Image (cartoon, rainbow, N blue to C red):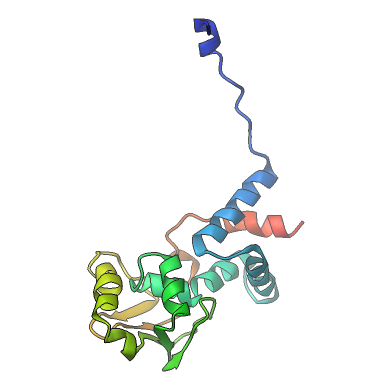
Length: 177
């Protein structure tokens, strides 16, 4: 039987190491954007080679992925659903069918749902319209035409466009070891 004094004794709180904090931040971002380690590392290496802060560039590249853009345009309820919509061939970028969720969009790209997919009333009602009715704000770097189910990239995303608190410096420090 457990005594009253034993119940009151608490285990010492284990502090997370600096490495643990860095790893947790990386894992959080990987899970949020739905990328695996190899692809995440590839994005980070590209961010290192480009001009500007590596952390900001990494987040800009992750935000510019087609699956994330589709999610931000309210055409999917989750990034996983956006990936599935893309892989199944329902999305066109500048008139060309794209089936790779990791496709990086650039300024002035036009993203729209395939005409054949729009003819399927169940798809439109259960997937597209369901999310369009929710009062989610579209980021300033995107423009949405709800009637034609199309979006336009107005500019490249910047750090302030990401609402989630991400400590990108921890990721840079982790990979810089």
